[in-house]
Length: 83
Image 1 (cartoon, rainbow, N blue to C red):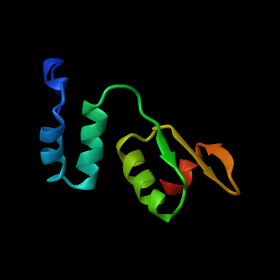
Image 2 (cartoon, rainbow, N blue to C red):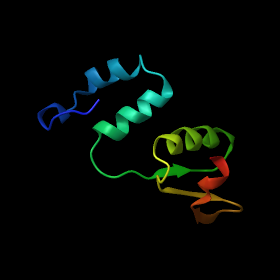
Image 3 (cartoon, rainbow, N blue to C red):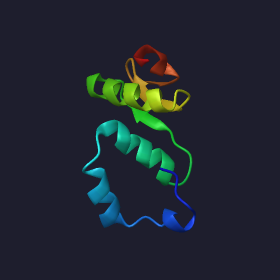
């Protein structure tokens, strides 16, 4: 699904139409392949967050994770529990 530099000009309506047809994993893969910059996953480490943590780190195992848990103490690297 790699795109050339010219194709990277993303039209929001086209992207939305495509993404609404894709399953969750394909949406995450699309975002990682098509959006500029580097990525960090923000998480509250709650029940719903566990699903996204698991999904995203299966695609990019070394994806940085930043969040708050355990009485609001900041933590990083806590994602190993979800893999």
